[in-house]
Length: 474
Image 1 (cartoon, helix red, strand yellow):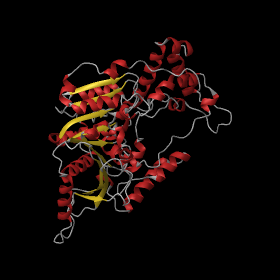
Image 2 (tube, helix red, strand yellow):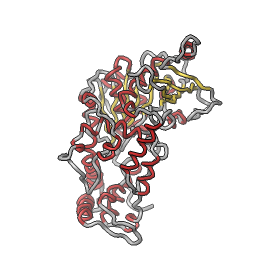
Image 3 (cartoon, rainbow, N blue to C red):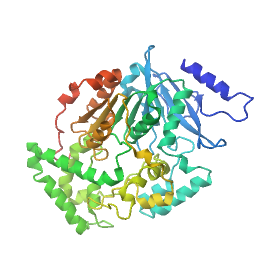
Image 4 (cartoon, rainbow, N blue to C red):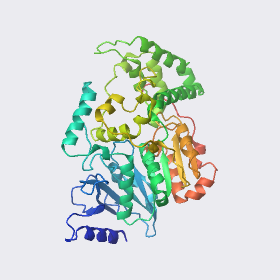
């Protein structure tokens, strides 16, 4: 059925009577052709390119190409497919298609992975090596963002066409050209925001949603991120204090750590061999909370930071910048639909907090340089829906805290919020963990309505205990 739909779509697109190929369309490629990802041969798959207009408001718009991998179910009797929406904004989803065995719903559902517009492997991809280099060497980041913008625009790229609303329309274009009546959305981090925006516009085409680490449109990240990080750090310290071994090893951890932050905020610390003082912001950045293994190390690292351990402080380095991260896409999305509606974007709004930790995902000066026009304020309205939805939040997630899970659930009338004990960010993708979050997602997708209505604890939830905190350097 799928192959027939694609062939029909392609033959229509290639009709000699049409001067300009129609969009949207899907172009299948063979496994031997160049493509961003290789799906393991043990899985049946279809790979290709979704071709859409860059600017849907212009009949003569340039086309853009988005990579798509469809991993087919092992079952002959299939349920509606699952489509994956990656985080960021600015990350590519395509590596996900290289590891399909990690996703249990492939037993009876196709799994669709799409590279969002503007991300690595899409054409065009809004890569900004100028900005990445500026961060690495601590040069003028604003000038670097301006240089990236000028270069991309010189290539004819319309940067105002790269945002969540456009990506949501790309998704529905893909659904239509593949001949899919309805599907299920699986989003992680920013991908949950995109899922909710899609559901707001195309909700009748969504059977269910799995939202891992939700970032709802009405959560103002740039005003709350420093507070969220502080709360996560305090929660870990309090949890440590409730465990006798952790409390003995790291006594009064919360008080000592935050007192050190205050002291270093007032008097940055010089370390032997360092080329600059270590700031409180540096100390905060050293605490690992974005993975469950990081959470287990967090009390030990907080203790070392509180003691100004010179070995720890000697590890202060520039943030790691992934080479495949599309900073231009991050700028275009965030500067048009997030920061404009933040108090952080006002001169009288909140500034840096938590020892100099920047509260905004993108410094407002960078958005000024990028010049993305703000979208209509309706983009940050709460999404109201009765789509069956599983919301997964990590107890110690510093980026998308559990209260944002509650905020998301507030307007989703058929949702269930699960807070994972000891969990961090994007728990379904913590591959070194116990797999609890992924098993919850699979159980939900197997029977969304029954899962939402059943409030009984799942086995893996009831068996999860406090993190086994690391007490010494190993």
